[in-house]
Length: 278
Image (cartoon, rainbow, N blue to C red; front, side, top):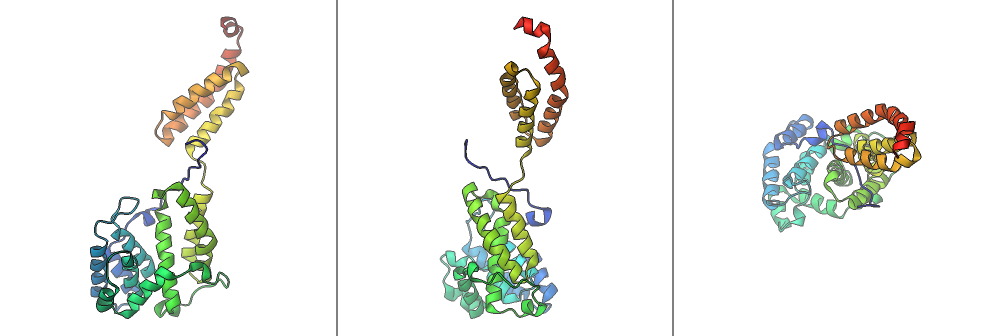
C-alpha cells in the first residue's frame, strides 16, 4: 500500500536458518557439562512437544522448533542442565500445563525459572559495566543470570525469524531489541548475543535498499537524458517492464540494457526526423 513502510530483513545466515535438533542441544550441553543427564533433556523435550502440539509459529513451523532453538542458544552460553530444561519448557505456562506437573518431573528450580522468565523485566537489568562474563558465571549462574539467558535467547530466536512478523510489529520489536536487549546482553558479558541482536535489529530499522528500489531510481534518473516531452512515457514503460521481472538478476540485466541504450535513444528522439513525425 502506498505510504506504508515495507520492512525488509536480510535472509538469515546458514547457521541461524537451521533448526537445531534435540541431539544438537544434548551435544552442546555435554560439551560444557560432560556429566549432564541426557534423559532429563529428552523428557523436557517430550513434555514441551505434548503441550505445544498443533501450535504453529508465524513462519508455519511447529512451535517446538522455537523451544529447541532457544534451548540451543542457552546451551551454547554454557548454562547448566536445569537452565536448558527451563529453556525447552519456557512457554508451557501459555498452555494448559499445570505447574505442579513440571515440578514433579523436573524439580522446583525449573518451575521457578519458567515463572521468573515470564515476569522478568529486561529493561530493569543494568546496561552499564560491559565486560566478559567469567566462565564460572555460566557453569554456576545466579538465578538472575539464568533467567536473563533464557529471555535473551528467546528474543534472539524471535529476531532471527522476524521476517515472518507483521511490519509494524517488526519495527516495535526491533526498536526494543536495539534499545534494551542488546545493551543488556553486552553488559552481562554476552557480547556475541548482544552483537547479533544489534545487527538483526538494525537490519529492520535501517534496511538496505532493495534491488528493485535501486533499479527504479536509476531508471528514473536515466529519463533525464531524454527530451522532456518523452520522459513521462519512457519512465512509465520502463517501470512496467521492470515490474514484470521476478528476480533481482533479471531486473539488474534489464536496467543495464536500458543504461547502455539510453544515449542512443536520446539521440534518436532528438533527431529532426523524430521531431517531424511528432
